Image (cartoon, rainbow, N blue to C red; front, side):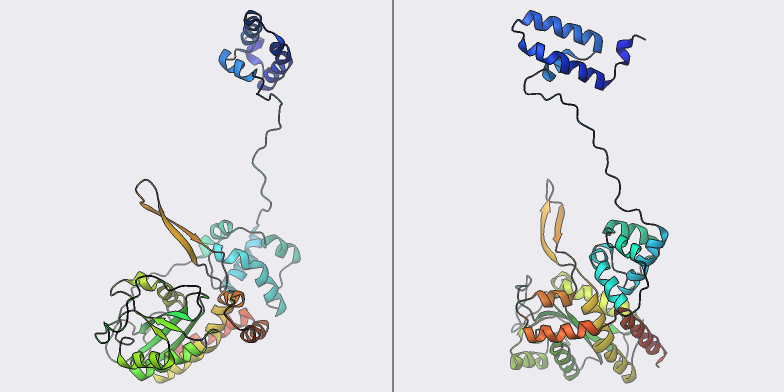
Length: 391
């Protein structure tokens, strides 16, 4: 094989750099043609391509090729061991919600002596990405898929007086909540059983719950009042589905007396109440499961959990994301592109809100400083184990 065929790309480029000044000085097409013929003969390069390289606008400077940047961190099994510990304390949050809070959670757990993590590893795992978390923890994540028995019966009264909310409220106002009930009836909806009244603030995602036996109007109103009073902003508006436990004269008169805005979702359209449907899973089903509860003793313990460990743990330490916008993309708009804000805890959203008073924020800050998330989680588990033994 001739030596010309073995000429490297860099050598060809260097040779071209040498002849380019002379080429540009030539005025005769014939002389330029001779120079091109000689160069192409030895380099076996395409003539048209060489002419483009010899253009005055083309820069032939040889630049250092930039390859893929090496990873800043390589995470060992020991690193993931500590990530798993934090992941567990944060209720097995996904990588998107966990990654921004690893640093603050390390600080909080160290404050109460819950995490004896080496400084070198602590510094390292603060930089772990959400995709790395999801990938490395994938084998540890367990998904529970169970069938839910619905006990919602459509309310027939007052529908003409309670307006249907066809789109979300102005989510810049705090205190406006979606509302729903969750039945703890086990595999049968017969007889009397415990129901959870669950509400969530659309702006801050602050969620409160109450347990009642049955669905009597007075008990529903009392639960709604208790849960609403615990909201940092107070209760200013409710939007339940069309269940008879909410669409009745008792609740209607209560909202009028308290000057609470009352709307309802469309029948059989669960997406109208998407926020609370999500919280029904994360704040009720994942906590209490699908067992049947039917005694006053169980109601008292469930309310103890709702009013203490559960609300403090979920609202102060478990981050969530909120949908900012969505639009259809693609040729025929077949795909929906969603944009979310950065993960924040309900407590953080409350502290950032200008609608919450400084006094209330100071009160919540004092509570937060004293809270140990690992201890809250342990106490929650102890009470849940006790609940399962009550008959």
